[in-house]
Length: 317
Length: 283
Image (cartoon, rainbow over all chains, first blue to last red; front, top):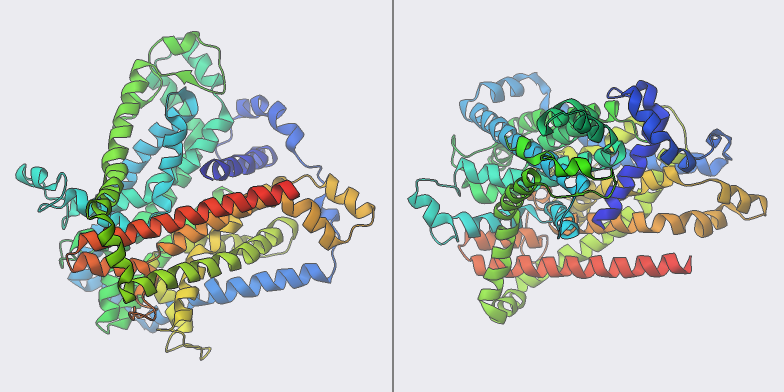
């Protein structure tokens, strides 16, 4: 299942990079020549505009638009409307409330750390998976996708069972050494990192597969060291894959709720994140505050999606 | 910080033929693999193993006790039924959306592309609030599903929308149109062309998307907190049960329910895979 998804991405990217090469931000002239012989036969003849257009086309179009409008677009718009129904008052209250500001800052810090961890790990493991052979590679590949299908609550439970200071597998030893993980920021970082773990890998692996390693080989044979090769050849080639992965992980990390809720203990001011603040405000009948905080979070999420969609058009001209 | 050790290092790699399959590990990359595997184990594998071990450690008792608790059994039933229903809707609507995005051209299509990805990036608690603003007590439509079982369905549907679309879309875009045109020129109706030519090639992608959306729905928590009210025996889902076990300091029970959910997910993944193979073979 995991393989299919990754293959699907790879196929999509392959098509796209040929069609779009000229305008692609990360485009390098040398790459296109290398890829063309592989991809050219796959390309469908460019006559899709000639498709038959009956009334069915318009019916389907209408169904899709209506469905997405009622399920996603309109509700999303209403959050913005509710956040600003009394002008900027609610937003100003939220942004001047010390507890909420603390929560927002903590969220940003946790997200930043977990994105850095996931980016380093993700790029490294992608290189290993694509460029090297080792026993257990298939198993590792399958396991790496797992965090996407595990319930956030189970993630929190899993981390608590291992790292809690009272009865965890490693927790008491770590606590004796002075590290508290659960009910503290490190645990929240772990939880956030866990749930966003596969996102960078899923973006980088198809790109690495697509660019091949001819240029890396050439650089190496001309005497470049491993680090120079990575910095000058590999990194520029996978730059956009990394950027999409980072943007998606960031959006995910900023918005994590369930896993963080389990491991945080929700201590006001010290382990309360923005999403936990939304829940608390809403349950405490501060609906305006909840809507205003949600609006900020939704803004980041929508911005992330727009950034990715602008720089990475999928299968379009 | 470890990226230097993770990059290809050493000289042995240089001598090999540039093959797409990959090189044997060099010393530097082996260290990198070790570090990465250790991190992955500490973060993901050991904690998940701890869930399984905790559930197994208290034996069959904990499973039967968890399942014989009415509220827990009802939560698991609700979760699985709703996840199946939502997956069925996603299979149809997701394929339809992917179809419209790939085969149709109209202004504003980019907006739809963005809208589809929003549920994936939106914080789940915000997703719940978002749905509550249209389908809650203050609904401008006058539809209030908050606190009903329909709200569970709605929340699952919202968070799982992107999966089938995003797995079908690239496959559909790559599909060769020649066979379709040949079939059409031989007199096949559009429906026949879709059923006999297009659908068989899409089925693996649809199955992959369906599996993802089922797994996501079964574990969903955040979007339900504000929307469903979490009423035991009525709108409480399995994740909420697990959380309340954790909060009541009963990790054995929490782990048992988590493992049951995991087992159900596995069964569904296997069933979907078998179905998909059979349908592709029948073509």
